Length: 94
Image 1: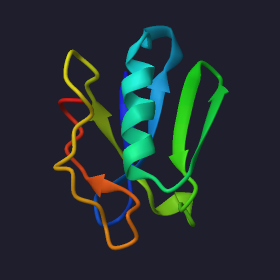
Image 2: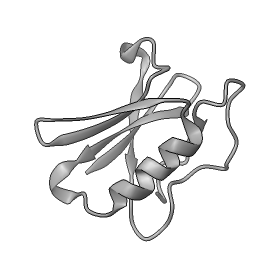
Image 3: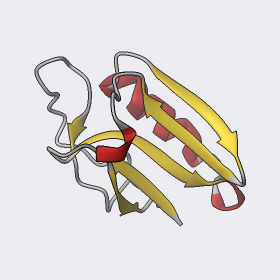
Image 4: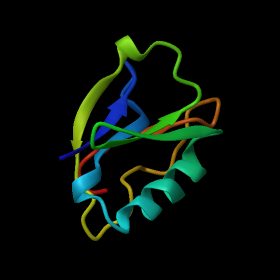
């Protein structure tokens, strides 16, 4: 299962993706990340792919929400926070 990482204000600040279930959707996730994060990192560890905004200061404050990466583009209303980093969370409908 895939998840999005959200900060306490429910802004999407990253993704935790199941590497075994991830195919070409990674490109849509990276495109979304390019548009919504000033900068980010991509790491793979223990069968998971992590895409995280570099603006995350305290990972302990983050929570996850289920994410669907079906045939739609990453979910967001297109708005950014004041810094231009992150979008409003709509985790289902990636």
